[in-house]
Image (cartoon, rainbow, N blue to C red; front, side, top):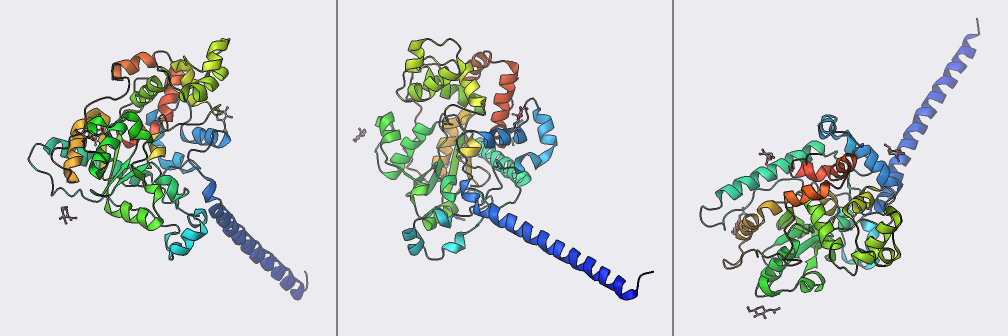
Length: 407
Ligand SMILES: *[C@@H]1O[C@H](CO)[C@@H](O)[C@H](O)[C@H]1NC(C)=O
Ligand SMILES: *[C@@H]1O[C@H](CO)[C@@H](O)[C@H](O)[C@H]1NC(C)=O
Ligand SMILES: *[C@@H]1O[C@H](CO)[C@@H](O)[C@H](O)[C@H]1NC(C)=O
Ligand SMILES: *[C@@H]1O[C@H](CO)[C@@H](O)[C@H](O)[C@H]1NC(C)=O
């Protein structure tokens, strides 16, 4: 039997150790959270490929795991670094220049602000005539489908990406209060032509050249405004996005960039792709980067150590336009491009004579990339490559209710 005061002492020592331990643990957890917040700025979406991407890839879409199994296991998969929804606009302040900080006084106000999550009803007062009934009901279905999807998978974390990056692909049209997120290979050139007409930069969409559309610097992007300008427009303008079946978009991008002479994609992407994935490549193709095969292109796309980075023409829509963060009011589809676009023009009160152009401005003699054309290209891939390509665009398939190709 030990003397009572000795027992007392031991008990006190034990309790103190316990209290210090718990306090230490709490401090550690707090610091951890704080450090994580400080690092938010580095989490760029279009970061060069490497370990992070591979890790994200592994955690989000394990090779061979079927859509069914993925869906059944819930949102858990999307919680990692690559989580496309749970991203917070922290460290927003730090990326602004000091001058902006001075002129934008209540900046701290924007720290960690959530982007508008609500689904606003479409204002249909300007729509005339009854012929839009079907287009409208399809639109409402798409809107609530995406909204429900995002609600289900949103992990409610704060933004992990710069706001400026989130809105960097969005074009602004101030007269009719339109925001358009550009998805290449889904009708974007004609959309930009239409925006230029709406803006008063052109009188007709039909005589604006391809180069003028893409390199003319006529249209402003949302990231060129200050924070107040960005938030005001996000909250009051009609936001639209036009998407396309992911595999059709991918094949269309490949055909456009690699099957025709191209002074950027051949030397930059083509050379690197041929060098890495073609055995016994001849000197000519190594020099020009021309003649990349679809299979080689897919090898590059699926490579965790890509010799060249991603490109907007094949980047996932979920990473170009952040459909779960920027709640788009209108979701158009390339498959019903003209009717969707013309209905949208009615909604925003465009002049009656402005119709969405029908023409295909590049390689117009080529057959359009149809489902049948896609099937021919997919035949060149192995079953595993097809599955991995599908997994790569898995979120795009889910968000916009595209049916999976038979892989
Ligand atoms: C990803 O998975 C592949 C095979 O499934 C494995 O070889 C690779 O080491 C994994 N990478 C990471 C970063 O976990
Ligand atoms: C809908 O649009 C019309 C015309 O632009 C406008 O007058 C009206 O205030 C809008 N309604 C709502 C609820 O925003
Ligand atoms: C999703 O796609 C399926 C198959 O094409 C279709 O039957 C269904 O109506 C679509 N759902 C919505 C909300 O559009
Ligand atoms: C396009 O055509 C209209 C007349 O149809 C003309 O007024 C305008 O200057 C043309 N624009 C360009 C860029 O050629």
